[in-house]
View 1: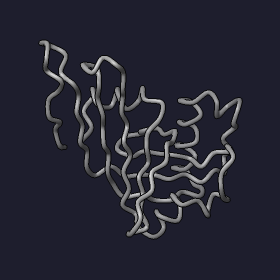
View 2 (view 1 turned 135 degrees about the vertical axis):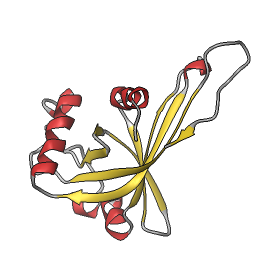
View 3 (view 1 turned 90 degrees about the vertical axis):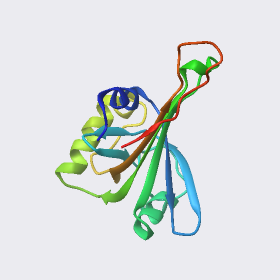
View 4 (view 1 turned 180 degrees about the vertical axis):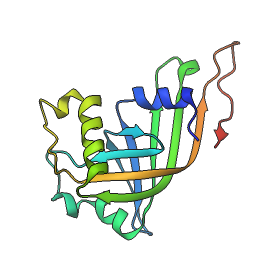
Length: 154
């Protein structure tokens, strides 16, 4: 579902914005993430939080309503280089097991900070989003005055 060009942009992105909802109130938080196959992973790391991992709004929202989205975007002053990818799907909580461990390993590989500054524990709670819908947009670069072109759905 995710073509190679979009996958490369997602892989190079350093931050995404995770959107969850309890069914009534939306919540958005910037997160570190990794895409493996058709599944996105985000771990609750050791940076200071407002609550324990199981009590965080994003975790409670996934428990109440598994629909979630991750927005990955790139902004620069040269608007010909703008792009975004919106990935939507069903979220799951991973407390342990092989899938949770693969996610931790991939996150440590992508983010050196998880190996040094803020170690990511092997038992970290992971939010997995199985991507079911994708929307993306990329600004067009040829020709003056053209800001962008519509995205595609997959």
